[in-house]
Amino acid sequence: MFLTFELLTGLLTQAVGQDVAIRAAHKSS
Image 1 (cartoon, rainbow, N blue to C red):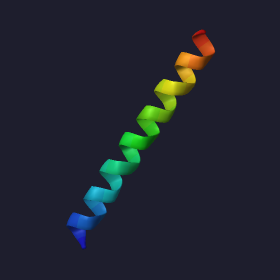
Image 2: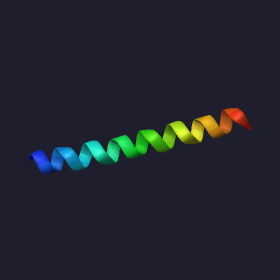
Image 3: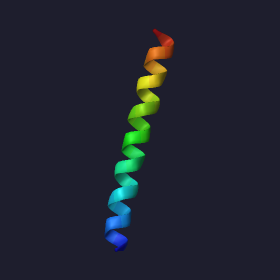
């Protein structure tokens, strides 16, 4: 269960990071 939680947290962090990067790119351009 801990492993699953870590994997989900990692995927969520990655998704949020990509979303922030995409939003920042759209704002600058």
